[in-house]
Image 1 (cartoon, helix red, strand yellow):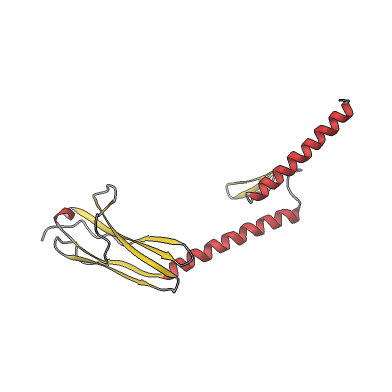
Image 2 (cartoon, rainbow, N blue to C red):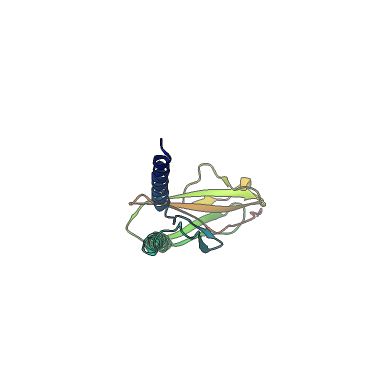
Length: 170
């Protein structure tokens, strides 16, 4: 292969590599030759996309962020209230008071958890109602409930209640 052919071949390979790099960077929502450092976009001169391409990519990212924010706001609006009520005394009945808004709710599940001190939260077996009777197993422990809501569009949202405890004897 002649030196001129070799140069053309290398140049062609470089162009293909740059093109593939641009497409890969675009697929990831990033600007070629740029990276985000401490909240500031840092770009290497000569490797960046045109200003119009940069604007297009950034507008896409902004649109994605706005959609995510709207979804979070809708989820927060759908759950108006989830609070445990009751006294932290053995034998007392704790009640999960919840108010849900929205037509898209498909299913609602409540799971109860307890922990001793600052230990790990452990699922309370066979407890999935809106009420929970405090027993001797709960003495010295704190309790909370976790609400899981499935919506008709396939989203699953979880939130935890306030914590009640430590549970004391009467």
